[in-house]
Length: 125
Image (tube, rainbow, N blue to C red; front, side, top):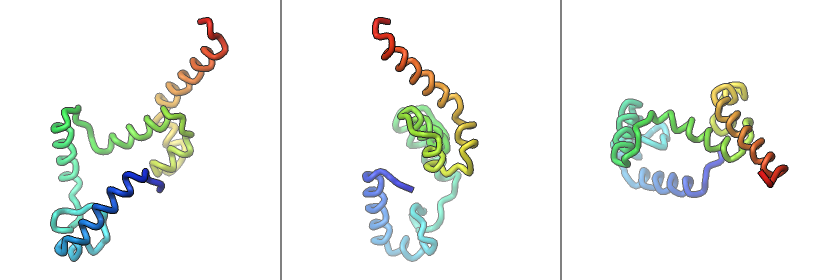
């Protein structure tokens, strides 16, 4: 999956940090990107709790970590990215999962596009 260059740089620094910590390097036999301080797999509940704490500290409404996928898809559609590309980025099994889940967003983008065309064709309005 293609990733933004800045994210790749962050992940590389994180990986080097993992290799520098002998305990983590030895315990992380699965080659996981994210582990506990001891190098063992993360528990989903702990990840969700940590994310809730980050939301509180940032002063933003608490959301589920999974909701970031929806935010990503919504932003991609708002940028005009095609549904098939969004499907591949989100790793949905089919295009119908993507379009079915984000039908409201897609319709909103379409309405915005039509309104844009209307203003181009009728600049006096």
